[in-house]
Image (cartoon, rainbow, N blue to C red; front, side, top):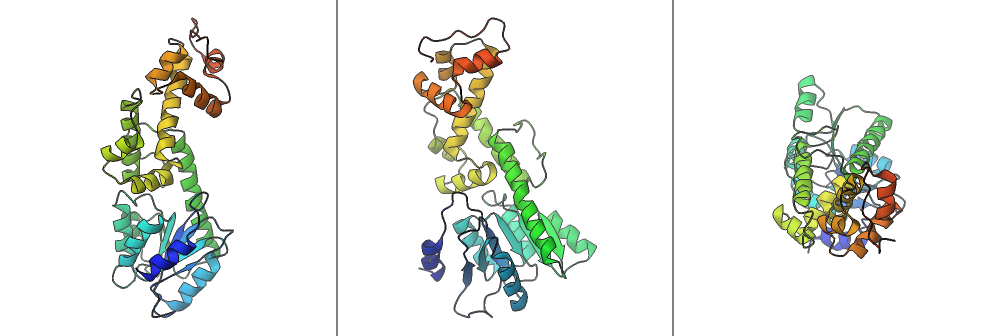
Length: 312
């Protein structure tokens, strides 16, 4: 077992509420026998991986960022591609001029892999010509900062990227996407992520009245393992696959309740709930009122919904 595996399993924080930032660095100058290093802070909420070749700059970045973030350092891009799928970071900070795999190659690989395309990549480099910057942005880098740099600006850029991701998660968690739109409408949205989420939403909606439709079926239809599908969806929406299925069903239920053409039991069945009692329970938990109360308050139909005797 790799040293990384032994230490990681002992030190890894709980995923709930945690955020991860990876810093790719060359660790040979720190300790020849250690291929990676991690600076863990119990108070931090993000894990960062840093990829830099110069020892003084690497140490400066790790020390500067570790009070706010959990910092993961990796020796080269090839190892990074493996470690990324072990930790599923929320941001990658990388130099361009690196051994074995350049930072721009790493960025391109990350952004063109459906499993990792959602991860923000910030390139920090001495290559400051206009064409260099354009090339970096063209391959999918979310931010490009030229050396010499201000640590305050770097910290602000990292914070802004993470804040933008949080806003997108909120938007997507509320299912504010149009499955007919094929290109992203929001900043920091990779087209692969948009297509992935649109496809997932369409799959759920196509099976919304099927109570047997499960996370396993959803995974299989999108050709991803359960673990990788979970982390991908969680990173984009903040919801687990099970939560997204339930949220989509409840969203559809609110639409039907507003229309006022069906009773509670019918709506429960149309939205894939096998038992109307369970439907009422989860609906009330989500919207703080029963389905019939919601219908009375928001119905746009003059006829009104037909209530079931057991609704309350």
